[in-house]
Every structure is written in C-alpha cells, then in structure tokens.
Image 1 (cartoon, rainbow, N blue to C red):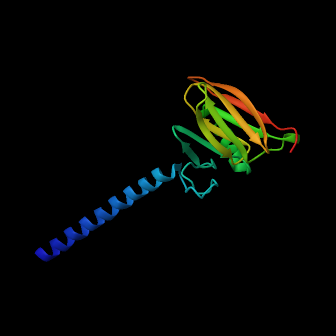
Image 2 (cartoon, one colour):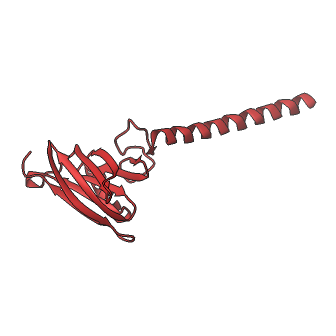
Image 3 (tube, rainbow, N blue to C red):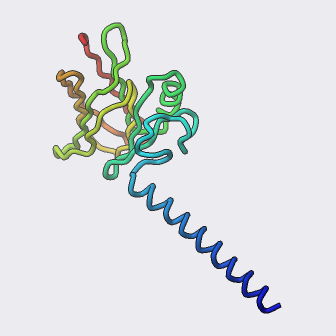
Length: 165
C-alpha cells in the first residue's frame, strides 16, 4: 500500500513538472520570437493564433503590427480588422495593383523611429500610441512620406500609390 502511494505521488509530481516546464517553455519561446501565434518563420496566416486569416501580429518595441493581403482571405481579414487598429496603411501601384515588399519606417514627432520593417503585402495595420507621426514608405527606391495623426479614439489611414513599377 505504501509503495503504491509513493509511486502515485511520484507520477503526479512528474506530470506536474512536465506540464509546468512545457507551459513556461512555450511562454519563453513566444516572448523570444516577439510574434503572436505561429512561429517567426511562418509568414502565412495558416494555423496562427490570430484566427480568421489575419497574418501574424509582430512586435517592434512597444509597436504591434501586421501586414499582408496578397490572398483573398488575408485581404478580407485585414480590411475587417482595420477598425481595431489605430493606423491602416495601403500600398498600390499602376492600375491599382497591390504591392508587397514596401519598406515602411514610422517616426514620431521628435524624429525617433518607432517602426522600421517591410510590408508583406498591400495592407499594414499598426498599433501606435496617440500622437503625430510621419510614415515613410519606399518601393523600389522611390520613397514617399505622409504625416498621420493617431487620435485618442478612432483610427487613421494613409494610402501610398506608385505610378510606375
């Protein structure tokens, strides 16, 4: 009887340890990757924790962002989510062609960089604190800049268009 209780207790302790280490390891892996859902190598929306076709939400400092929209599911998901994000960006070319691989840099009113990344598609959603910013978008060495003001409530949008590809 004593042997049976000792074995049962050892199994319980081992199971609790494995569960605790597994949860802690998962949390550390997510924190290290700075990506919500999926993995850092998964740039698609398939199987990520965001659901609904929304691409991976990434973090740079205290700024969260997501980009994409090459496929129909991603485009619909990004357009549907715009109202929950303070800033929505759109990148198009001739004939309203959607563009990807647009270099995006957002600077605050003091000239400090708050985001420096490349868009994976024609739509980018950015979670910024309220304030004034300048968005610099470059496509094939052709840069444009637009001022944006993020309100305390509501959203801001900026569309970038390049006439030649």
